[in-house]
Image (tube, rainbow, N blue to C red):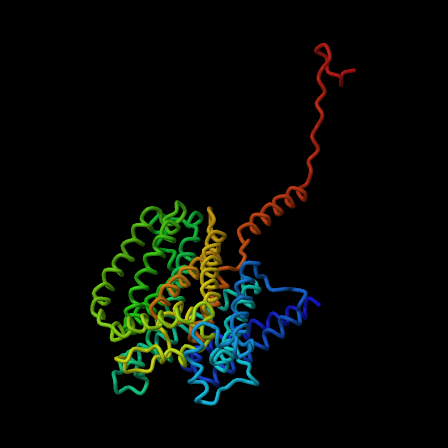
Length: 495
C-alpha cells in the first residue's frame, strides 16, 4: 500500500513539473490548445489525488473556504432563472434588447445569471489548473516542492536568456516579438512584456532567499585559518558554488526585467530587493556567519542595485497605456457599479465592457488592466468578499510562517515565495497578470509553497532529543564501587 501511494505521489510530482515547464511556452497558455492540455493534465492530477483519498490534501479550513468560494462563483452565475427575474437583476435591462437582436432569447423563458454563459463556462474551466496546482503542491513533501522550485528557476532562466537574445538581436531578429501595443521589447514566449515581468517578479525573491539560506546557514567553526580566510574559502566549497549560481541567476533575472522595459516590473523588482534586504540581511550578519560585515555588505550591494535601477525606471517613465488605463478604470468602475452586487458573470468582461467603453478609446479592450476591478466587474459582491478573504489568508500565512531562532532552508524558500506573491499582488493593481494561465498557475504554486505547513525546525529538535536519549540508553553502565565508612577508625575490612 505504501509503495502504491509513493507511485501516485511520484506521478503527481512529474505532472506538476510538466505543467510548470509547459505553461509559459505558448503565449503563457493563453491559446485554446495549450490551455486545454493544461486542463486535461489537471483532471488527471485530480483523479490521482482522489484515488489515494485516505491522504486528503493538507489544506487548512480557511484556505478550503476560499477555494470553494472561487469555484462556487462561476457555478452560481450559471444557474438559470426565469427571464422576468433575470430582468430585475442589476444592469440586465441594458442588455435585454441586444440579446434579443442577436437571437439569444434564453431557453424557454429562462436565462443564466451570467449575461454570457459560454464565457463563464470557459472561465470555470480555466480555474481548474491553478486550483489543482495549489491543492496538489500543498500536499507534497517539502523535498519534492523544493525540486519543483528548481523547475521554476529553470523556466525563469530560459525566459530570461530568450528575452536577452530577442533584445540583443534587434528588431530584425526572428526571435523578436512585437508587444500588444506596438512596442518592441523583450517578452520571451509571452505576448506581453508586463506579464513576463510578473512571472519573474515571483521567482526573483525565491532565488535571493535560497542565496541567503546557502550563505546564512554555513558554519565556519571547523574551518582552520583566520576569519577572512574562512569566509573567502567558503566560495570554494559546494555550498559556495551553489551560492554563486543563485547570485548569477538573480543577476540574470534582474537584467531581463530591465530589458522588458516594464515600468511596473522594474519598480517592483526594486521593492523586492529592498524587502529581501530587510528580511534576510540580519540572517547574513548573524554571529556565526559574516558578522556585522555581512549586514553592511548586503546593504551596500542592494543600495547600489537600487541606485542603478532608478535612472532606468525614469528612462521608461512614459507608458503608452497610462492615459488609456485611467479611462478604462473609470468606465470599468461605472460598469461594476451598475451591475453590483451580482456582476455580469465571470469571464464576461471582454464581451460586456465595450458597452461602457469611452468613445474616444479607439482600441479593443479585453481586460481592465486591474485584476481586482475586473473580478468585481464580473463577480460583484461575492468576488469582492473572496478578494478580501484571500488577502486575509495571505496575511495569516505570514503570522504562521515567521518564527524566531534559526531557519532551515525550506523556510527561507517560503519567505521568498511570500515576497514574490506580494509583488504580483501589487502588480495586479495595474495589469491583468492573474488572467493569464501561466502566471495564474505560478501564483498558485508559490502561494502553496508559502502556505505549506512547515514543522521542519520542530522535527529536527525532536530528532536531536531522541538521538540524545538513544545514546544515553545505549551507553555502557559502569558499576559504582561501594565505599564503606570505617567504624571507630577501623575499616570494616579489618574485621
